[in-house]
Length: 141
Image: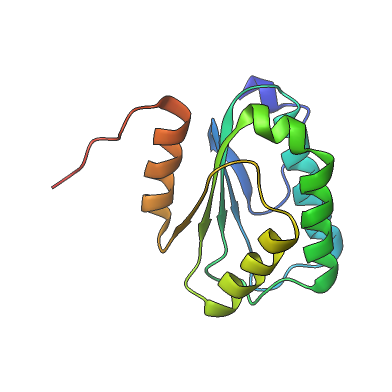
């Protein structure tokens, strides 16, 4: 899309379903790569358009303590912007370890937006669509 031409999308980050942004985390992610994702997400929020984010963490082995600090710092720095623009964050994972890590992060810094835990990407996408459009997606039987 034309509005994204100046935003470098790190590996795993996609805005192809705009206004939903999806990050599919690899098995392991280096701190610098993780920071690049946070920076790109900040640039997407800087477009000043409502959006939803999906973090697909099903294949990820976990985040480092440094990455946990990066997340809480990013949340603190962009809280006002997130309140205005972020319609919700869907977390897709099937790991109890990841659930525990994210719960710990949210104890430190409670997000000012709705968070939904999903076990599959389709459910997360449908939820994000509802959050950004206000419409419930059609159910295929």
